[in-house]
Length: 354
Picture 1: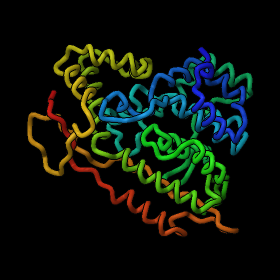
Picture 2: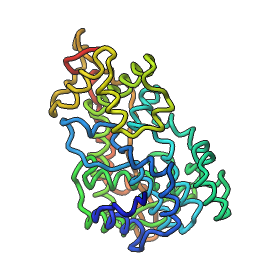
Picture 3: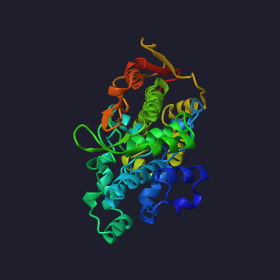
Picture 4: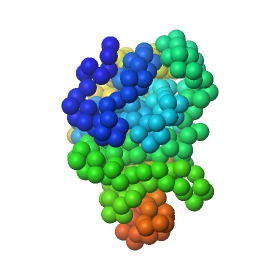
């Protein structure tokens, strides 16, 4: 299978924007078309929420996202090692993505699945053959955290955070921008030095940086709304029930496509797993209720505790000075404050039970 043979015109243009108007380098295509990377094309970035009628979302695979991140890194560094580390950063993503972090109890960092990255790359004959051909060591590409353009700490801007904000805003989560707007925003980003003297992606246009921060605020709330947290925990609990009954193994989560795993859920004969999943899948928006008061027994209730807050306070270059946008824009400061002012209700629930 060649991933690029089936690429939509929309994604072709989007990837070309991220590549700075150039074609996707052949070496990236070679690494993409390996079994371990192609597996990521069967996993969506939406943690399984896309399969319910309560969401209006666009399919976007973990592989689509990884290619986008790699192209951003390539555009700003033209460094193969950094680019490949970005391409591989989600290679260990399991079925239903961060919903499995919830299963592992990792609500806040959502990084519990990353530890398998090295093993998956090392065990891939195809990827290791390409790395050996290119004279690249495993330890130079198995941890994208070591490259600040690829990844850095919140609230800084790096390729990973930039890509999922751009793609989520063109329709994956919300329809906020079109590709023309994305191209305009992207054209005003360059590598700047942050307050610690480290390379970081930042803006050279204040108005476009403010536009970016506004959309980031909308998305941040979307990531933490009650129905999303509810849905991710539902998957986690279903996987836990099936695992405890020998119907799913941890290994299965890294080998199965989402479609294959959903088929297992819908055919599950344990308790009310299949029945409750069907209710959730066919429910319209508004079916998940939320309250700060415990809704009572007889319902499936998710208690919402501390959940990862995704936000960005990017650098912006004004004249010869580089500052955090929050320090130079009252508009951006209010947008970022609004991110933290948003608090989901304590409980999210639906009228079914296990």
